Length: 328
Image (cartoon, rainbow, N blue to C red; front, side):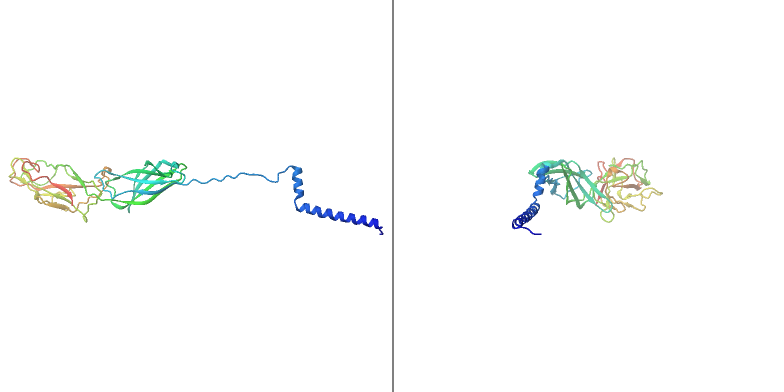
């Protein structure tokens, strides 16, 4: 094909214009021009705002310290009331602590059982600082609770969101108490004839109650009786002599086993005689069934033939004093 000079110039112009348009189009595509143009035509946003919401979790309270003294002595046949204190800290502020939730317990573990004494309503004493409350708590420990150095304290509290904190790091000592009471306070015998043998008391047994938390056994400390003569109240020249009485921890049989049989012991005037067969453990006396108790039986093995008709006792005008039961 033949082109004139004028025609050739026009052709080259068309060519360069085409190349320019191609380059321009590619540049616009790569720069996102068409996206911008399309967005402006359709009304779609090219950016959008949004909100962030981040919640910080509740912090559980922390019981930072427990303050308890000791050791504590049992109260005979009663409760020993023990007061102690603990502090609770909450990083969200002390107002976040639910003061009605504060409670505590004392716990003792032994081979056979777990003993727990509880107070479910400890009292707030007010704030120490902006994040800490002070609490007071009183718990009763019974006279029959075991002695030991490892009575544990647990203090507990929750916050207003029911998140809980507790402290179980503190122990205290509960001492032993050797104590007992007996009844009846007086033994009586039916009418005794001179020369009578093996006469038991009409109001047996002598009941020994362990009113402490010490275990009296054959290997540790014995139950003992200190006896005196029963002197004639009208004529003190006559008496039922202490060495004619026996005391034992069993009864029955023929002849009566407490009257010199196995497990019974002859008394000696104004001397302590151990009843080594008697064991007196500790326990809740109100539980009944012999818990914390031991029974002793008294027998007059021989009444002298010389006796005259009168009352004989340990509390007459010329008496030697009452008998004494003890744990030694």
